[in-house]
Length: 188
Length: 52
Image (tube, rainbow over all chains, first blue to last red; front, top):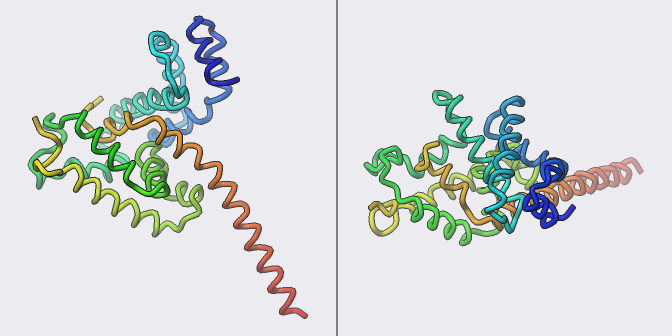
């Protein structure tokens, strides 16, 4: 079934929408949650939360890209759950990116609540669009989908060393972009 | 959720970039399979030439 037909089912408040979503995108949703949670039961709960939230939010929302919409909900729920369950044991993917924005040398840790979210999002969007396609995909696979280096190597046909070096350089570049001309993060 | 966490902020990046990375996987797997098949064929060819 096409995405627009599934969205129409949501808009018509037909419960078949959830089944069709599960058939078409269930696996992708589950795997994205699993990447962040590393636990089958939590990933399944997260998948179900995603269907529920999609059911509640469409309408009023009418997503242009259904998969991206569902994965965004799923990622938020997975991160909520990951924060709750792994407060002490933070996953590697989180720690890596914290180097970009949580650097204490800058005196503006993200925890302080000083970050201008819109500014950071715009910088990240611009940064990603400026990258080569291959680099951009590696970055998103790692930090958006939360995939392991090993998974990325298999999917991209690359050596682990190359992926690690690529990610390291991109993190440094992103950090420089986030610092910007005004000293960082679009601080208000 | 800590909305100020950069990983959380990253959630809202452009939909097209998310889909681009998602779709690239299929090609990656496809390419990987063909790469393995070609490498295997190459080794077999080399071996058969050496054996002659």
